[in-house]
Image 1 (cartoon, one colour):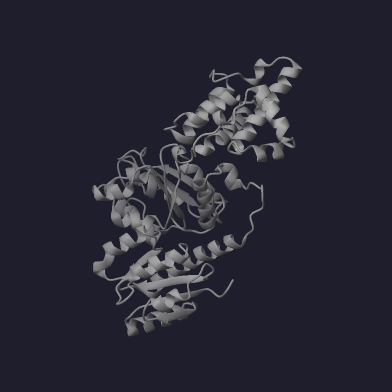
Image 2: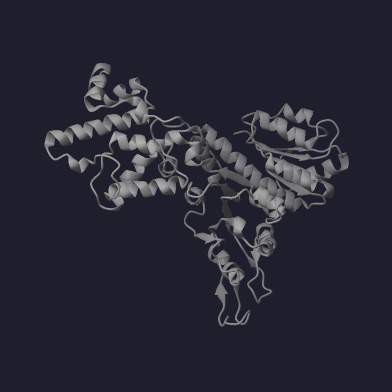
Length: 444
């Protein structure tokens, strides 16, 4: 990879020069520009650096520059420098893809810290782009988050791109879609994998004890506090802290948590001692936090500080074509978990599963798989009903063909090629077993 560099854009010459000098003293390679036109000439899919731009400039302003950069490569980190009156504009920019923003006046150390994190993220993106995908090979992320729809392919790509970094991440998705699975995947592929993963359900913490649970306390901090206690934040030092359903965090506590995010320090209740906190924060939400901000229930500054990276976990309704394969995998997992023989799922059951709505998403689909394995659902004939050898073989063959039809979206050529049979043989067996590709396929 080429040498990482910073492209610094500011129409104020003195500020541009002093900022560049400070960054060079911090070890960065810096190129300066008085306008954005020249910057766009240097941006490409393999650009190995970060863009730092003033948000208010004549000609191409910072917002327009960011949008043009994202048209070339949406993964190039753009850091915007703002005046005090531009904070709302900067928040809008972050929603539209800016990596972060720095408010004037700022220290060189603060800017350098943001740039280092952005550089690390860009390096990971470029490294991932250089890796060649091995055809047919499933890695751990794909095993945890299976699916062939584009939304799932994109989600796994983004997890791999940001997982190894320390970027705080916001995971958004419906109930049961798999937000915690995504959070654990991010932790497990990071350098913090050997350190604690602390999951905190913000909706379940008792209101009168929430600060003590998170920050810890000293003896005498409140009635009943007879001995010192570490909070969950301290227990997670060196690792990852998951704040599940952060939208449920009380509004007055959000300000205290914002300080933790910004400064990475805490103080236990009843103590003035500052405790450094080396953690990565991941938060999940099933509600639209921007709507919560508009309603006055969530802090805007906490939202844009929290979502350095945002991952959207699709619902099953957004990836209906994945439902049959996902269900078959969940059935296999359930059979192993309950110590049952592997079950051949009849095609009529797969067809029914594919056509149903799943408002509870993967969680609800997993429950359905468990019930089928335990014999609690009469969704169709089960393998155990076939008693003779010929019937068992026929049932197995029927299930294999039905699964292959589902896996290949009803396209017959890859089915008979993958099964090593001729087109004529496939037609004959489909007729023999009453298999119709149309009843096994759903609209994606």
